[in-house]
Length: 142
Image 1 (cartoon, rainbow, N blue to C red):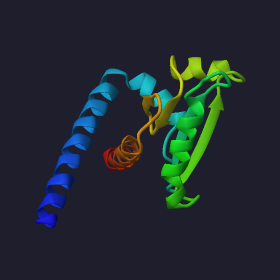
Image 2 (image 1 turned 180 degrees about the vertical axis):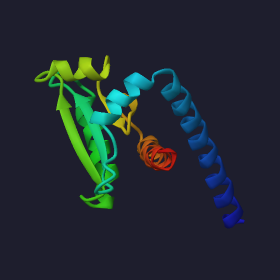
Image 3 (image 1 turned 135 degrees about the horizontal axis):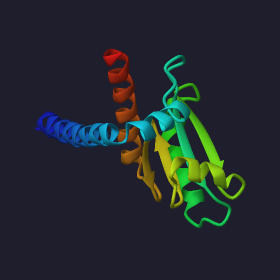
Image 4 (image 1 turned 30 degrees about the horizontal axis):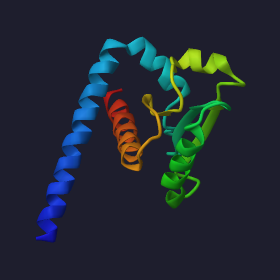
């Protein structure tokens, strides 16, 4: 019974991830020039297999400290070699927000996909998985 519940859970999450990936692929086809620009700057590094997570925040943002805390809690169990956390303070570097099309804070970007607000741990892991799958698909397609 527990095993069948687990299989249903995995199947449901695979469907959610596939839906997210299909949406991301359709968005990539519509906005290839923007995605290519973002991917060249914010992408999972294929050389050392680390995944880059970028957090856009500001000094005056009330939700940004909690967003950073959630990200750090989510990735701390994996070790420092798996993820590279890059934090961009848009108060100090407003051009970065404009360059990446960031209009609200906090915003987390992983592999060209972004989420605004305090991210949920599950959402972060789905974004990481999506970034990993998309990076593998790009290698196969090339």
